[in-house]
Image (cartoon, rainbow, N blue to C red; front, side, top):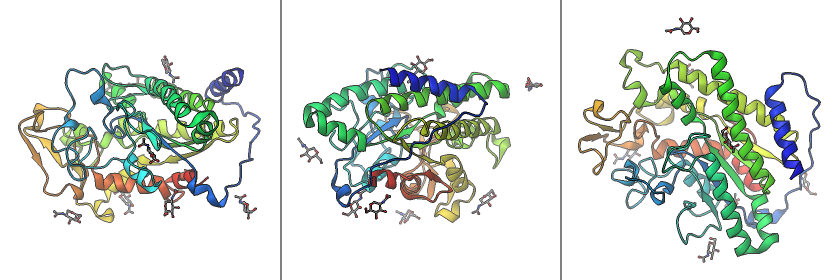
Length: 372
Ligand SMILES: *[C@@H]1O[C@H](CO)[C@@H](O)[C@H](O)[C@H]1NC(C)=O
Ligand SMILES: *[C@@H]1O[C@H](CO)[C@@H](O)[C@H](O)[C@H]1NC(C)=O
Ligand SMILES: *[C@@H]1O[C@H](CO)[C@@H](O)[C@H](O)[C@H]1NC(C)=O
Ligand SMILES: *[C@@H]1O[C@H](CO)[C@@H](O)[C@H](O)[C@H]1NC(C)=O
Ligand SMILES: *[C@@H]1O[C@H](CO)[C@@H](O)[C@H](O)[C@H]1NC(C)=O
Ligand SMILES: *[C@@H]1O[C@H](CO)[C@@H](O)[C@H](O)[C@H]1NC(C)=O
Ligand SMILES: CC(=O)N[C@H]1CO[C@H](CO)[C@@H](O)[C@@H]1O
């Protein structure tokens, strides 16, 4: 796979040089035809707890996480499913907009993967390696198995076409910066930048692997306003309405590097089309201006353990923690637990990813990618 090696090399170059490179834009794409909408276009999801529809229950773990117990999921599902929300997560809404059924976890045996697969795994990082969690690399390895499933089911030609028309959505990166933050304070700006470059390089390596396997359309949710997570702010009441700047700046740095890298890669990878959703600013704006978006509470979690000090994650749950408080109406909250957003916030986020204005979603929207 010489061309793949070359791309990897170019990626290193793109990330490691400040010199101006001579770029050769590739701008020829097939014109979409009128029956494009009927074509088979699966959705593949990669990410962490924000995108996990329940993969971790199939992994060898001592104990299922709180999202497998009440009151998670109940706003929409009959019971908890492993989704870290009161109801649907962002990929559920994206699938709905793309006229696809709910995207099953890749580890669910006997599942119908025709409409796509979710590889997302709660706790996943780009290069973190926790037991009972599929990190990015393992998620991409799983994709190879699913590719085989497509070939078996639809044959070589049809599966190749489906994988090319498919949209690959990524929600990654937050974990890396939270780990860095928890591992030690006052990390130098230079180290933060090198670290962010490494995270982005690893993430774009995965994109290259999927591109090499035939993928062409990629969607990214950039890193959110990590310093505003209720579980972190609960430990720092002195901050009042402000968020933890150290984490905010790491997220911004990652997002800037991600956007620059994809822009440059797009010019080397024929046919690559991507969408970046500005999760950071979209969520931050909602946190700061709740009422503009139909919320009442943007800072506290709906679902909190009581007393809060017992559980730093701010997770409760009938089978997890005995004492907890649940807000009256989770639809009015942005955060469901200390780290994860509610279904109503997820629905707004997904809408922006799907068809948001260029100020939040660019250069393409997911809707445009699905329509290609
Ligand atoms: C696609 O083809 C149609 C008809 O040939 C043309 O009118 C339209 O402008 C083309 N669209 C793009 C994006 O090239
Ligand atoms: C979904 O279905 C609706 C109604 O049939 C259609 O208008 C829309 O274009 C479809 N969307 C996609 C992305 O296929
Ligand atoms: C799998 O899903 C596809 C798309 O929804 C459907 O057409 C097909 O019949 C399903 N296959 C099985 C075995 O259920
Ligand atoms: C943080 O690091 C900077 C530069 O290395 C140093 O000047 C500063 O004193 C450090 N602050 C703390 C609180 O350790
Ligand atoms: C990410 O980085 C780790 C450690 O450097 C490496 O082992 C792994 O192969 C990389 N993953 C991808 C997808 O590039
Ligand atoms: C919860 O809040 C939403 C949004 O304000 C509202 O539409 C819904 O009716 C409320 N539900 C209950 C049970 O009060
Ligand atoms: C649209 C809007 O009102 N945005 C405001 C949200 O909150 C931030 C911080 O308080 C303001 O700077 C924005 O103008």
